Image 1: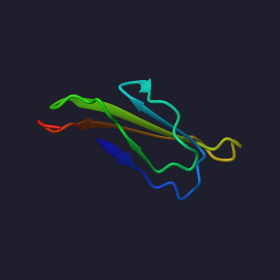
Image 2: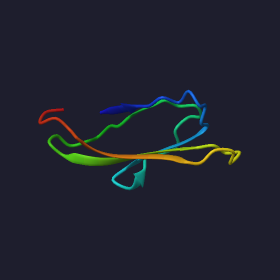
Image 3: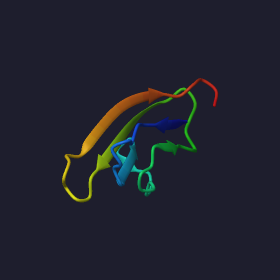
Image 4: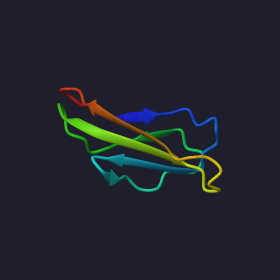
Length: 72
């Protein structure tokens, strides 16, 4: 499963979480992430945090529940 987002604002500090666990560093100015090792027919909570390291803009946080297909 993959997620993507619009990073036209140029956020350079990007964090992706799956069920509350950070999934490793995401490259600066990233606009997508590919999850691996997921189970079929399972709903996961995905949280995306986009931060401006200069603190000029607020952190943008998006949380969404995403079900996987019956077969992966």
